[in-house]
Length: 561
Image (cartoon, rainbow, N blue to C red; front, top):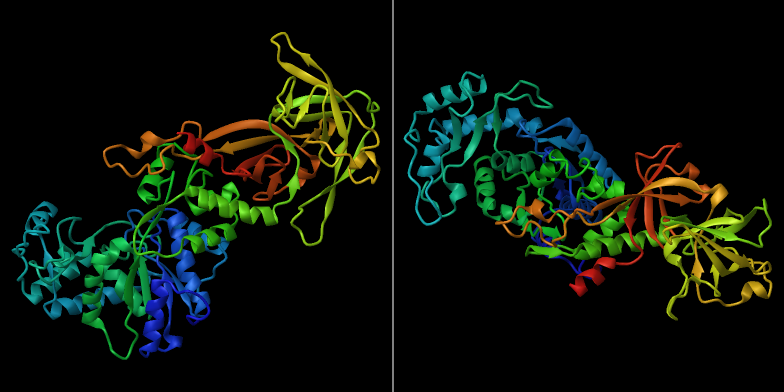
């Protein structure tokens, strides 16, 4: 990689600088370190693309390391989901690692800290500790247990490990400086007692390391060269380096922590705690609900992995946190699906159309292109008959000159089929149209080459043959929150902004080629938007999720407001 190839972001500039200063390229190693306490969201997707993207650009290994130091909140389900998400995005890790792999080494180092007078067991309550820690403007005071003897500390720490004490009675703290300007350096906690079953180590441990202690040392053990994390960890960098100073061997690579800004997405939340709230309080139907900002939710909704990668590339890496409009993500989704999604016909708000001069009982199988973006055009057969469904919005009895769809006395083309002319309507007792009657030009079939087939009419509408139509459940999703930044006002509960109309379930009709469609298959329902097959779908009942419309309708709504 060189600056001639592309413009470098500030993290790549750091790497390039390190290489110039003597770091061997074969020593480059990156990692993605999720906590297995929830499903990954769109913010994690950016971090995944960053770290694995660096691995690809520099041809360097990238570890997947689970930060599994809190068994109270961690589950194997989350481990499996995280691995599935990363693979689905198209990335492969060099080594699958766990902080729990290093529990014994971390414990052994902690014992060395005690022996060197750099750690002690504190027996204060959490309230007492909070008082003596001070504030950003007021120095802390030493714990009354800070000067326990090495022997007493070693004894207590071993007994903590052996499960002799209850949770909350003792902790192990690093002995740094209670007057330090960075409050994280005021004798931070290294271990707490937690008598919880761990998804990998079972009941082997009764004490667990804190994130700040485990993270940098895990980087060191794996010989990670660059540990990139989000901006809230900037104050932690000093502690990261202090812990490394105590164990670093200059014959090895010393990991370097650097920070980049979170990119928050509008009309959603990306806090795992808040996402869990939405799941537990049944505002959504699980972590993979298509309205969720989770990677599994986006996958189920039909977002292609390459669209998410392109989105991450487009927004780039920044030093300042900002709010990215979700319409940019939707643009990336449309752009990708436009290239890859087959076109099919579906009618979601049907009204019956009868072609009065079409022979009774006749059916034709017409050619329809699958995707005009294909290099080599392919076609499928769609059935045509006397009775069709069209969209109710595609007909008006009386319309102005700007309405180019079907009206009485005017002509439109049925996509891939014939030119028809509106003749009359049948209504129910409430005045609602139940049938539209029309005639067709027998010589106007698309692609037939006749003079009539080449006649220009102002509108083209889609349709589905009623005898061949397959009924389908269609889930039309909208944004989960009405406010672009539901998390932005700490005085207002983010759930106040939940969109009550974020899901509408309707019955539609699709062409018979979709009968064999499988989970996650993606399609463009012509003139309506992009849709994918949901996992709830079966041969007996097709279920589709709306992925995204053909254009950004929210932009119009918000500009009016």
